[in-house]
Image (cartoon, rainbow, N blue to C red; front, side, top):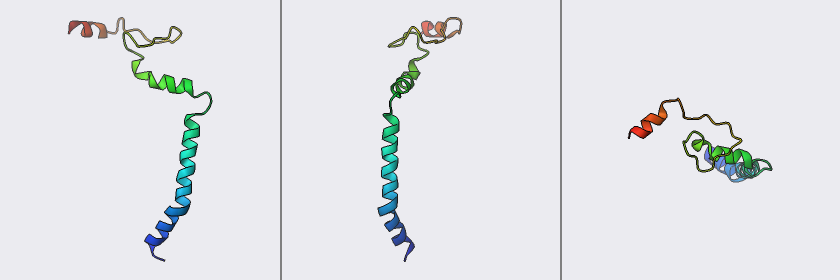
Length: 77
């Protein structure tokens, strides 16, 4: 059997099954119970050090911009 023919048969059968199972596993991992908090935190990570974040949580420990020297650069422009 030619290499191409063998690889084509493998890709059409077992590799297709493997890719389908991987897809199902990735979907189940993304939508598992308890992952909402992790996904929300990851989605809002870029806003963590803004001066006025869109939705600031009071219980979150975020460093302030005071004393870092960044505030004077923003106000100068």
